[in-house]
Image (tube, rainbow, N blue to C red):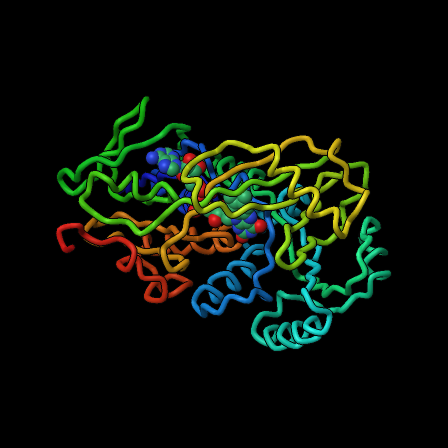
Amino acid sequence: MTKKIAIIGGGVVGATAAFYLSQNPAYDVTLFDEGIGQGTSAAAGIISPWLSKRRNKDWYEMVKTGAAFYPGFLGEVLAGEAIPKTVYQRVGTLLFTKKDKTLDELLKIGQKRREDAPDIGELTILDPDDIRELVPIYTGDKRGLLASGGARVDGKELVDLLVKTATTNGATFISEKAKLEAHENGRWIVQADSVTETFDVVILATAAWLPEILEPFDVKVDVRPQKGQLVELQTAWETNDWPVIMPTGEKDIIPFLDGKILIGATHEDDAGYDLSLEVHTLHEMLENAQQQFSTFFDAADIVTGRVGTRAYTSDYAPFFGEVPGMDNVFSASGLGSTGLTAGPIVGFALTQMVRGEEPVLDPANYPIEQYIHRRSGD
Ligand SMILES: Cc1cc2nc3c(=O)[nH]c(=O)nc-3n(C[C@H](O)[C@H](O)[C@H](O)COP(=O)(O)OP(=O)(O)OC[C@H]3O[C@@H](n4cnc5c(N)ncnc54)[C@H](O)[C@@H]3O)c2cc1C
């Protein structure tokens, strides 16, 4: 018998789940996505988790596995066709440290981490002139560490590809806000403007909006929004093979194809769900980048900005699993600033739970019950 599955939220997590579940004709998949504020399509797109200073082991396991998952995952989505560079490309990541001598320490850390994360690729310290060979606009005098396995992904292109593939497989995509209603005869009611339907299984991939969708269910959800803005430039530079540039404590520079460059992003904790682009903030980020990539970027290159909302838990840890007290409702959230890296593997893990398989990531390390619990238990 066909199982009806609703996925609410069509960022990278929901769209990945829609792709995998739509492969099985026994599942009748409907993906609802309002799209407003989506983190995925606003993201900078850096896939380079290995040299982070963060010490949370479970988080590291998730993002390391997530980064390694990408090429095979895209291979599956594209059924063996070459991965378009517009979607994903391993261009390497170039990292800087505040003090020059810590770069050598970072190299050692990277070499150690490569033992169980070969996807980090080759690690090479580059002198300023070597850096200029790669990225001619570099005017700084610092050395940098190049990790050849680093990649960039265009979140919007990725989600469009996933939704297109899922709908080709038979899934229905509804570009509307959905509401989850009470449980009736073992099924969940999902209501959007154009449809009201019942489902056997629901996946809530609503990220920062998880508290809102769970509002009617007497649960407390430890998830909050964080606003992020980025500058988008169109330059005349040949950026196709430039690595992603990650200066410490400063804004990252993410070159895309044909001269397009993103700079950012902001991490604004007090802005709630606000989605306004602030021109002065965009200019500040550009000026910041000009410190080491001086005159080559020009305010005239600014074409636009991007803005989106990240989802954070109070201890910054991500979670996924079956929502406590809500049978056959699964969710993931709290992916924070590395959710594009983790999104496909988390979406896949949710899919595995729906299929009754053991997930590739151990849900015990990302306990959903720590972040969603009954109010009546307060
Ligand atoms: C500026 C910025 C830069 C970033 N840079 C990076 C980066 O370089 N590398 C990295 O790994 N990560 C990055 N991230 C983080 C990453 O983008 C997110 O963590 C990730 O995309 C979250 O994916 P998601 O699917 O959980 O949620 P989202 O992509 O936020 O998708 C959630 C979707 O659910 C929809 N929705 C919510 N409620 C409803 C409802 N009731 N009905 C229908 N639809 C609903 C929303 O409209 C949205 O489309 C960045 C984020 C931002 C904002």
